[in-house]
Length: 282
Image 1 (cartoon, rainbow, N blue to C red):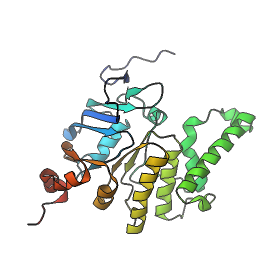
Image 2 (cartoon, rainbow, N blue to C red; image 1 turned 60 degrees about the vertical axis):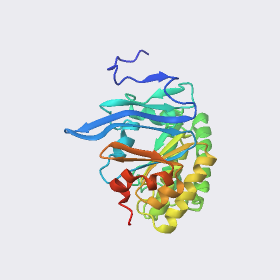
Image 3 (cartoon, helix red, strand yellow; image 1 turned 30 degrees about the vertical axis):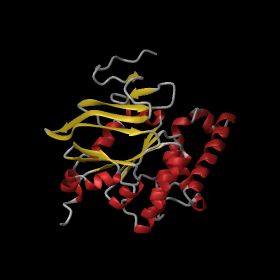
Image 4 (cartoon, rainbow, N blue to C red; image 1 turned 90 degrees about the vertical axis):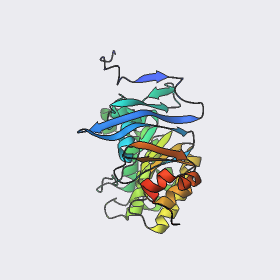
């Protein structure tokens, strides 16, 4: 079927020359404004394959806006977002693609606020993450025809494996409503694993967690990267988590690029100290 013509400045593009061989994602000269306020201003950075990459900045720096532009919740005014899918598409420009199509490319995300359906069990909430992979029709599912039953068994096993990986398989049949916040955070992580992720975007994953849970989260992020062979991009205000888990960090302020370096380099960077970490004491 022929797709309708789109504005060429926003049309999806496929290319093989916009990413270095070891890059998973490149944000290129990204800009977006709201009511005349420049939320992201000519921002560029690249994330390498299997890297845990942090994006930091003061409140209002534009971090979540960057995430929303990458996943096309917002359409940027300018710039490109190139992503290596690992599929037949190769490297694609995400800008202009329908929001619902992004997950099918292998890019998934969590949100600052936990998004679960309280009336469903933990297992059922995780199964939602596989919705794009179900091939059975509504008719086949309603009458439990063979393909629908096969898919249900396959994805239920996959969801159970994700819950077991995150250490909450014993709660699989409990309703999400009333579960501890730390458990619900794990449910959200498990749901991302259902989508065969190439890159997972974590938006403040430690928000609301205590010190013990945050320490466990750091280990979990590394385990997800290694076990699922994927890249991690996270925004987080807990600097102990960011400095302890990230391979590299990009710092921004008022939507502008400040620095991109390994954690020790970010700690020593004067611009970052002034904008986010604060001046070091003499």
